[in-house]
Length: 271
Image (cartoon, rainbow, N blue to C red; front, side):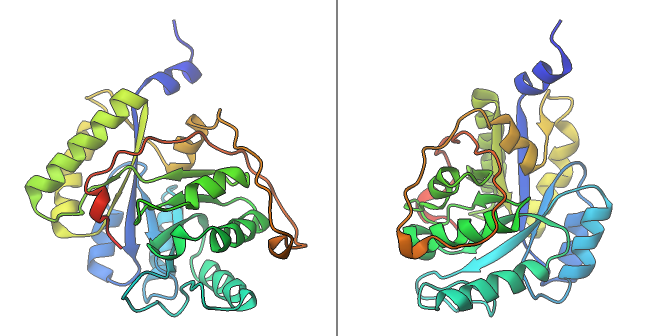
């Protein structure tokens, strides 16, 4: 018979992150009622972030900082990261954003289709995440040209990347197809990471489908566990430019294995 550890590795697993929380009370409350180990990503400095993030933590589920980043043609959030800001200002914004989201165990990007394509800002961000210690990073892949996941791995930051946006198209039929794609990836590759948003259409689908996972032989796991499942691949060392090497405290975490680059609507991913 397979041991418990081997069973966990062989049973397909799905990890789901609900993004954009903290701004809307009712949508957030409904999202928090989803069953199982769903993870929740909160925008910093939003009206309901503290209350709802603490509720997630009390329920034994994972909280992420949904960190705003620069993207073309859009307004940047007050605590968002921009390539034009001086490094000390970026450091201040990141620290303030992280402080505003209680119990955050991970970080993923909100928007950022411009910034995540730039190596130097991503090197800097991973240095900051590593210096804090105990955080993982999820690349939301709002751009197919993102280098964030690659750099996180190279710098020894525990990390994963989004494979499916469940609601890149909000029509119920499209959301259902994206959910089936998520399950297919999990069955073929052992695990899949999907990102969703607190839309009524998305929440209705998840309320119906999540209770069926156990009967279908699929586990719902938090992002940290998905990263552990894929943690046998070690990143190559990254040679930092001297100007970007900061004399700061560091806490290294094991780097994960790569995920597969399959996504619903990847070409036109959500910002």
